[in-house]
Length: 180
Image 1 (tube, helix red, strand yellow):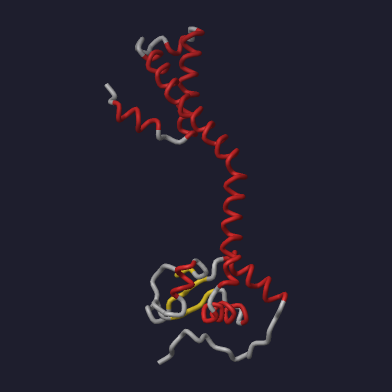
Image 2 (tube, rainbow, N blue to C red):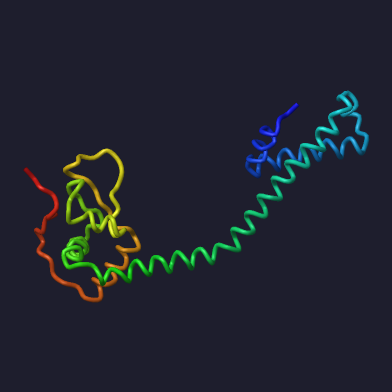
């Protein structure tokens, strides 16, 4: 006899699996109702088990449909909230201290969305904390760690740079990378 835990585990199945079970059980129940001879050799408890499985799998399908509907209804509100949060983040770019703004200005001027620096570079850590730089994961040297400017920040910086471009020396190197 299945336990309550087995039923809870079954309820966590994906909707394609639940729909497949529901359709198979519905086929057995319809065949039994119509009196098809193919089911004559099966034990008499099979239609009862198929009915119970159909109820549970049908419930999973209905719940998944409700979840998808609710998610679709909420999507515009989540998108608007995310856009507002991103815009608020971008609005704070103008409030950055000059030393932090200089880091982003160098990156834009040299067209480097990824900055390579020491892992604990003191000029980059405040930008990481504020979300204007992401410290990338992976296996890297602690002396040459990649930091990436998020796309929404990068796009805003490029838009501002195109509005007021400035010249950068061609041989400008990464000021954060120490070569020894």
